[in-house]
Length: 486
Image (cartoon, rainbow, N blue to C red):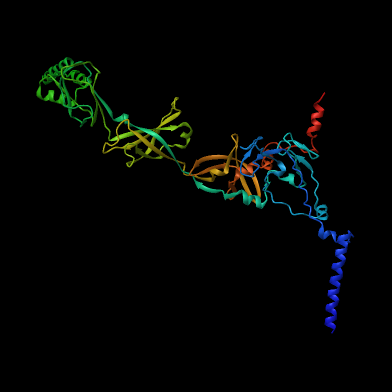
């Protein structure tokens, strides 16, 4: 019975509430607190964009951008994006209550130029490009060379660092070369008196001859006269008269010792004299024919021994410092790339070609099979390096500004420091550092140019120059400008 009474009471209350709501709704009677359930939601207004226009974006949101006002193909204007609307990689600071903000509020000591120029201000201001001056708080100006990035930005930018390591740098210098004769192994066949060619050996240019092979037979009146005088002195010496200078005259005319010995043995003056090859080699030139007259000093034959050959490599002036005497060399003929010759640097010529700005480097090679021929083209690979270990970093870690070379040191916890360094030898994708880093330092090898693009880096690089003056030490930029006016 009690349960039925409670159920009836609840149903009566619901019916009364419904009837009251109907009457209030139809007659416009206000109900306190009821409007919050019926009032439509009003969106909060978006803040107006601030800052200068940095670029323009396609109105449809596609990845099309422009630095100047532009229209689409159908005539619509690109949307202008201000500095406040640009994409930011900074981690958003968590919202804080006014009490927490008041408790942790810091007061800036002064404001410095966003591009690192030696210009400061005691109050907030903008530079000529509309960029805000950066606040400097207590303790931050103690080490202005450090750049601090949030962990999120470091991860998104792909910053990667490697330790400085001590290595021996070796590098190959690849240059063109030309095969040349060994100047010490070239000989010329010539007479020291006028003569007539009686007979020429059947050899032509390019033939190989051995030492002592007869090349020509000639008749020389001067040689015949000296031979007759030598024979007369020999006969006189047999009767006890002293020997004169005929023997020395024959030697001065270039008569071989075996011919002089034959005259002394046979006691006869030869009508013609055979002229032999002074060394083994190939015939480079043949300038005689039978019956011709030659004058003293004329070249009859030119011979060259090609068992040892030279390769002269043209090394650019900028690479010359890395080449040393005795460095290993690999030579490949362009006509026979599969054949490799090994040698060493024998000489660095003491002059630079004015037209090509190159210096010849001589490599001496054995040529037992005669494969290397004069004036052949070759590809020369010279090993460089002094074999001494040095502190090295990857090539990608060095930022070359044109006037100085800088690496970014990773100090950990998102802190980075630019450091000016002195470079040494390059090779194997690394570069030696002679000054500026220590063993164990870590250098940024990727995304270092993104760090360099940060305005804070530019301010840190200015720390390598004379330190900027603080407002407490010098007057502000505006004050100095007003003093210079008449």
